[in-house]
Length: 355
Length: 280
Ligand SMILES: Cc1cc2nc3c(=O)[nH]c(=O)nc-3n(C[C@H](O)[C@H](O)[C@H](O)COP(=O)(O)OP(=O)(O)OC[C@H]3O[C@@H](n4cnc5c(N)ncnc54)[C@H](O)[C@@H]3O)c2cc1C
Ligand code: SF4
Ligand code: SF4
Ligand code: FES
Figure (tube, rainbow over the protein chains, first blue to last red):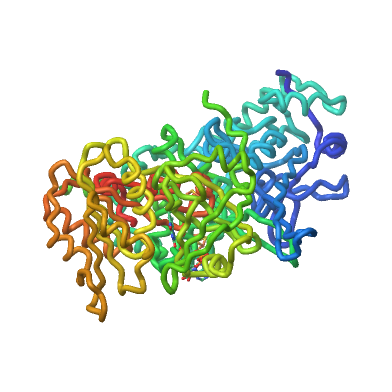
């Protein structure tokens, strides 16, 4: 597939074109954060030189969405009787996410194995996933919290992206990855990339990868975390700082847990699905009052365990973390998931040797 | 390739409450029928499977379908009042509408139990899932050997399904023992905690499967008693309770390590529990 080139100052012309038939989401400043919001035109200042504070998770999996409406209705023939009508709701407008990172787009490949398989299909997710394309921006500079190379291919990982955009000179080389991506770059606004630009792309990718240094092999984590399951001293130690705020889960492109609640107003209302958070005490509190994860140590164990052990155990070793580092960057008390995984592997190895 | 389920996973069937039975001061039984006649006629499930019951405007919670698949006049759910949704359910009466998402989860391995003796040990509301399997087996009586039931509750008032206990006590092909925690005037049956009564009953472990369900503390001591009686972990079947939402393995709420109680359970053998990480 032919790669294209777009000078930065023509970007809005292309986005305008995409926005004619799509909902386009772009990273913009939102108070102290950078978040994906609907593209409103050339006046908007896009933040493309840094990873957005929040991932574009909501583009496919909104923080809160109605699953259905319900309405209680009086039976006209029999006033003593009340009926209820339920109507599924679904909104899946064609969407283009522009300017997320390759790790962000790859996050959805981790969702896919749970939400969108032949055996189990969440129609709400599946419809939006099908209608959403990702134009991911290869990182020119990586952050100290990035570790995409431990858990994937690195900063130019193509999985989940439809177009890979690489900053080259005063513009971007646009490399279509999927058929959907090919359609996006079939635009008169874009020129074919020159050989020189393509060579520069390869260099940007290589430099980004090099800046991350050597990858740590975390394949042993799957076994190690299970081995340490009952070592509560270990878990209390690594979770000591945690204040159970949940920021790590809400900002994570691969966290997919949800709650379902009803909101009613008069005789009608919505059944709503919202992001939920395994770091909170209420997440597993049972009706009997029993809670299988009573302390933050139990809960952090589940969060790390799910990403690096249980999910890989069910999905051919695939780690349910894309290495975006947001949980590290935004944790108010600097809990670092990398440190926990490394320490778990070391501790499990040390225990094996000692026994 | 398996067929893509065309069904919206979260959309409940509308059902009408046909009958409400006050079982105990805090347990009510609801007999419900799906409004869509075709759906009701086509509805199939296995003993032990659960459903999500909804009261629209309040939400959904998980309950065992405790009527057996051999008696399909209605689907029966027995609900202990513990919180918001269960309180709202308790306010419903015949004619009211609920939502039903069912069947969900796995079921009792009744095929591999054929030809064996069965010991049911139920505590409190834990009798609900056992009732399904017990009635199913009584309706297929020839397939099973001796069947015993030990059912315990705190006091006589806390005993559910009172309307069928006399029949169970009378049946020749069922050995029923009822017990309460403390002596109580007018109580003609056994007194004592379930695990102790079980040890006195002394069911033989040979060719026998024990099916137990109840509060965690009861399960814990019942498992110990069963082991004393010579039962292997593979001969003990139980059900797990976890807080659930989706019921289909997606929302991520009910996992124990790699297992999801909503799809890999709620029924597990004690041997399977032994293989799970310790997070019950
Ligand atoms: C497989 C399975 C089968 C089951 N079968 C049965 C059955 O047959 N019969 C039966 O009676 N039960 C059964 N249960 C249990 C039943 O699902 C729960 O008792 C029920 O979901 C409680 O619902 P609720 O909305 O009334 O409780 P909730 O309103 O959720 O509250 C229950 C309790 O949880 C705590 N809690 C929850 N949320 C909050 C909050 N936001 N703030 C503070 N505290 C909170 C409180 O302690 C509260 O009292 C089963 C459960 C499972 C998993
Ligand atoms: S666990 Fe942390 S690093 Fe991994 S995907 Fe989630 S936020 Fe990013
Ligand atoms: S962001 Fe940090 S403090 Fe907050 S729940 Fe996650 S680990 Fe704990
Ligand atoms: S209840 Fe949602 S995963 Fe089990």
